[in-house]
Image (cartoon, rainbow, N blue to C red; front, side, top):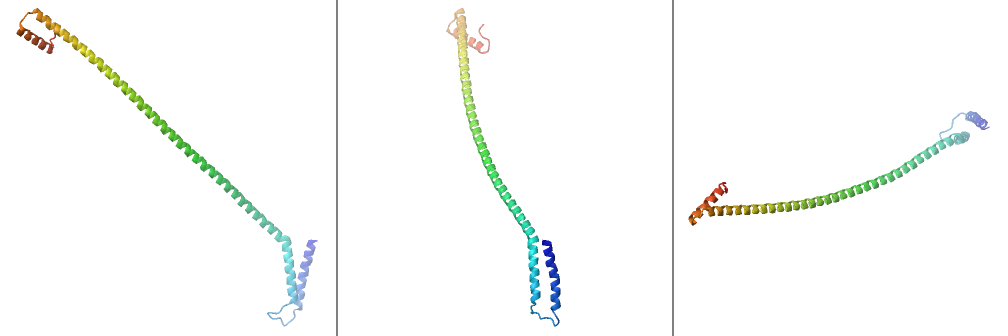
Length: 195
């Protein structure tokens, strides 16, 4: 039905302008002369063209434009959504990074504190060991000194007994006794010892 209307309208347009041109006559009009028939048919053709375009062309064009607009809007919405999601992920990442830095700083502080504690323990242990070594050395020195004094006393007693034994064996006068003791001490000093 639509096709028949369109065909009838196109046929009427095709026939009508020919009739209008036939009426035109000779003597041509001026530049500013208005031909009402031509104007009428121009308006009718324009109206039909607008109707046909509105019916068949503008609908699909507007639908395509609307679809394109909706596609662009959905892409913009999706991009905004992804941007928000990326901002949230970035904020989470920054928070995790700050937490990791805080934990690293805590570990460093704990390590420093543990190192300081170990250092103090080692120093205290070394101080205690040094004191023990000094005490052992003092005790050893005391023992050695006591042993040397005892040895010296023993040697002194032996020397005195040896000297007395010689003096008793020879009953000499004071000058001879002095010479005998000096000779005995000289022999002791040179390594001869008491026989």
